[in-house]
Image 1 (cartoon, rainbow, N blue to C red):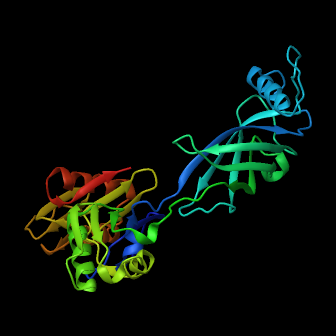
Image 2 (image 1 turned 180 degrees about the vertical axis):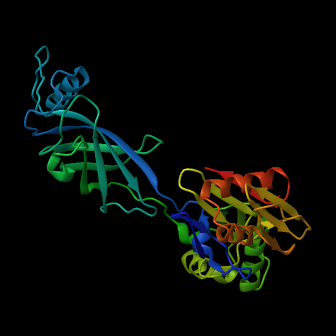
Length: 334
C-alpha cells in the first residue's frame, strides 16, 4: 500500500501486489442458510417520567388492550398517559439460534414521546418476515448519555430478548451446501471449485455461475457437515480482481486496483506534460515526465504527485484518460 501527499491532502493508492495473497474461503464466501434474520415487534414502554406519548390514539388503544389482557376492563375510558410510549422493537436473530439464548434489542419510539429514559419495555413478541414469533423481549431500557442526547427516543436492552425456537436444525446432515461469493467473479468461482475438488480428491464442487458454487457432501463426510465446512472454509484461494479505479472528488481520495493498465497516451494539463511511451515537444515552462508503456495508473499518479498536481486536477486527468480510452479498467467517481 502506497501513500502520496498532494497539497496537504492524502491520496490513497491501493496497489495490490501482482502475486495476490490468498484469502480464506470463509472470508470471501457465504454458506446458504447460514445467516442472521431480522426480527421486529410492536410494544409498550412504561415508567416514563412524563416524557411519553400523551394522547396518541394508537398508544391509548395499546394500553387498553394490554390492561384488558391483564384483567383490567377500561372500555369507554381514556387510557392516555404521558408515562407510556408506543415503540418498535428490532433485533438480529443469529444463525443457529437456540431456544433459551438471549439477544440484544433496539427500541425506537414511534409516537411523540420526548424521551425513553427510565422506561421499561413490556413483554413484546418479535416476529420474522414469515410472521412467526422467534423471540420475546422485555426489560429496562438503556438510553445513551443518560437520555440527554438528541437520540433519547432510541434505546437498547442488552440480552433483552429470549429466543423461543431453534433455527437451522439438521444442518450437519445436509447432502449439499451452496457457497455464494461476496464479490461475484467467474474466475474466482472456478478457482474455488477446482481447489475444493483437489482437496477432497474428487468431483464434488461445481461452479454454477459467477457467484455460486455447489458442494456435494462426500461419502466420507456423511453426517459430518460441520467438519466438512470447517475444512473447506480454511482453504486459501487467490480472488481475481476487476481492474477498477475509485475516486472521491470531495476528499481527493484515489483507490486503484493493481490490474488497471494505461495504454500509450500523452497528457497535457496546465504547465505539465506526461507521456506514456511517446515523443512530445516540451513547451515553454512545461515539465515533462516520461513513463514506459508498461506503466499503470499507480505510476501515473506517482509521477503527477512529484510534479505537484493537486487532487482535483489529478481526478480530472484520470477522467480524461478514461474518456480517451487509454485507461483499461472501470473508473468510478463517488
